[in-house]
Image (cartoon, rainbow, N blue to C red; front, side, top):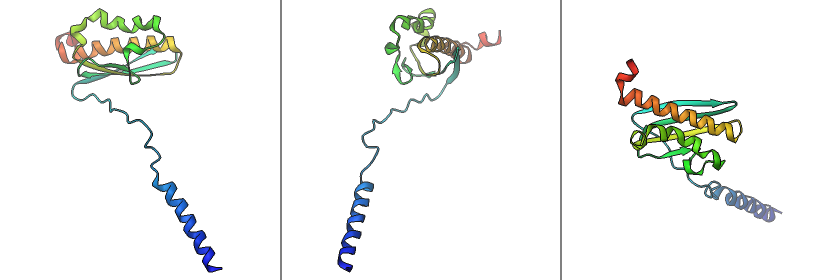
Length: 138
């Protein structure tokens, strides 16, 4: 009787070891850390229940919404609405900036308008705070 119980214990520990030895998160894709260091401003935009938070700082002109490039925003017909702040200020104002936007809540259209407002506020705030100090005090 002692022999079979030892075999069962060995089998139980073997089962436990096999489940604990496997890394459970190995298949998940690693996220790149999207951090902006140095000079930065954080702004927000709201439309109905959609809230967008934009983090704008020094970089290389990378603009991402929820980790995706700005070119992949859906719905496609409203993509131009997100481009409007950039078209108004000109490429020279934002080519050296990274902007990371997180948006949640609301519907697709409300999220587009919230992102647009957050981006516009971020561009103005960054320019006023770091580039043109005189415009902030006027």
